[in-house]
Length: 170
Image (cartoon, rainbow, N blue to C red; front, side, top):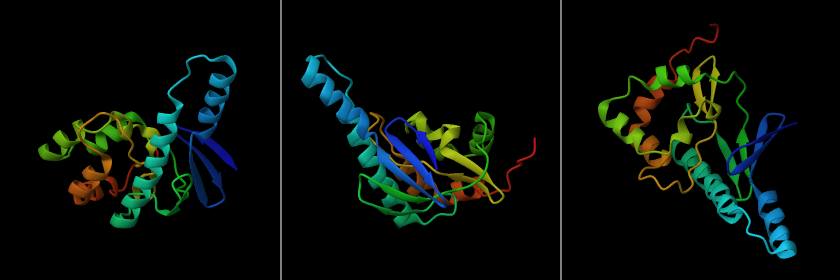
C-alpha cells in the first residue's frame, strides 16, 4: 500500500489499483476547528467538492474516450474512484515539454487555456509504450478550458505524441 496526496484528492495504491478520494479529512478537520474555536478556516469545502468533481470527470473521460494514453478508471461513486495502477517512472518537466512542444498551433492555444496543474509531471508516468496520463480529473480552476475538452478535441494528436516510445534511460 502507498498513500499519495494531491491538491484536491488522496490516492491509495493497493496492488494493481489506485483508489482516489476527495480530501475529506481537511473538510472534517476544518469543520471541527471552526465549531470549536470559531476561527476562519481554509476553504476545505471547495477542495472536497473539487476532488469529488475530479473523480466524476476522470471517470467520464475514461468511459467515453478509452484512450491508451489515459490510465483506465474502472468505477466511481464520486467520493471514490477505482483506477488502474500504471507502473513506470515519473517524467521530468523537460520530458513533458518535449512531448508536447510539437502540438499543432490550435492545440497549443487550447493548452494555454487549461489549468497549468494538468501538465505537471506528477500527472504522468513513462512506460514502455510511451507516456500515460494518470491524473486527468477536472475541477473548477477559473480557466476557460478543461482537460476533458482538450482530450476530446485533440485526442488523436495527444495519442501520437504520448504513445511514441519514450526514452527511459537518460
